[in-house]
Image 1 (cartoon, helix red, strand yellow):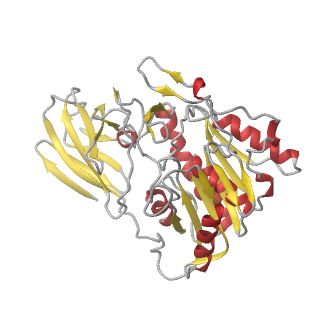
Image 2: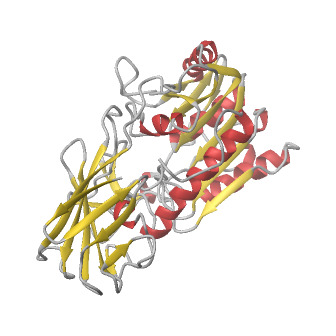
Image 3: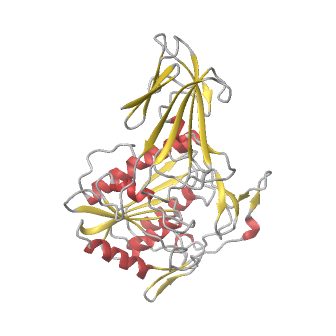
Length: 405
C-alpha cells in the first residue's frame, strides 16, 4: 500500500487496484480521473463523479459512480473505461519489460476539467515477465503457445500475463516480423510444428503436450494446429472463424483453400467507417466446405469464446457451424461461451475496449463492435474461463481463478 498527500485529500491504492480517498468533507462531491499514455504517446483517459460518505471517505468498492465515463458500482471502471484522445486508436503493449503507468487524480466537484486538484497518485500496472515468460523459479510448468491475429508483429503482453499464473508461455509471430513473410496469404503449419517441438524440449515445459491460445486469425491458426499437429493438449479460440479466411493453410501435402471475401458486401457507416461483418464468402456445402478447418481431427479439448457483437465476422454463427461439423463427425458438442454486447478484440481484463481502428488488410478504419460495459465485463470473465480451462487440462501450479492481471 502507498499513498500521497496532496492538498486536501489522501489517495490510497492497495493491490491489485483498490482505490480509496480520504479527506474530502462529508458528502463532498469529487471527480476521479485516470489517465495513461501508451508507448506511442497517445493519451487514454476516464473520469467518474462520486460523493464521499458521511465520514468524508470514498471507497470505490462500496461507492457507485454517479456519472462520467461510466455509472454504478464499478471498482475498476476508471481502468477499463479509458478511451484514447486519438480517434480509432487501440491500446497495445509491445514493450513487456515496462509497466503501464496510470495517473489517478481527485478533483473537487463534478467538473473533471475545472475542479481543484485534491490528490494525485501514480499506479504501476504489472511489470511483465521476461521471454520465454517462464520466470517462475525452478521446476516444470505447463506450456502454452499464444498467437494474435491480422495485426501482425509480435505481441507478448497476454503471454506474459499467463506466465504470472503458473504457465510457461511463448508468444509467436507469424508474419510482418523480422524475416517472416510480409503478409498472411499463406500459413504454413510446419513453422508452428517447430514451435511446438521447441516448447516441449524446453527444460521448464513439462509436457506431454502444450496448450494453444489464439484470437481472430490467431485462433484459426490454433484450430489448424490442433487439427493437424501432435502433442496439442488443449486449445482456446477467441473469436475465430473455423475456416481458412483469406489465407491458404498448408501442412505437408495438404492445403486448405481460402474462403475469400466479397468486397461488394462492405457497408460504410454515416461517419465513413467500414463495417466488414458480412464480407466473407458464404460457407456453401454446409459444414463440409473445403475451406473449413477439419477440427474433428483435433485430439484435445477446445474452448470457443465468441463475442455476439463481433463486427470482424459473425463469431457466434461461426462457432455454431464448427459445433455442427464436430457433431456430424461423431464428436461431442464443444464448450462454447457467448458474450452479448462483446466485440472482436477480447483482451485480458481491464484493457480499454477498441470499438474501431485501422484494419491492416484494408488499411482503413473498421468497426470491431462491442458495448463498453458488456465488453469489459466479458474480458474479466473470459480471462477466468481461460485460466480455469488450461489449469484443468494442462495441470500446473495455478490455484483457483482470479480476474487479476
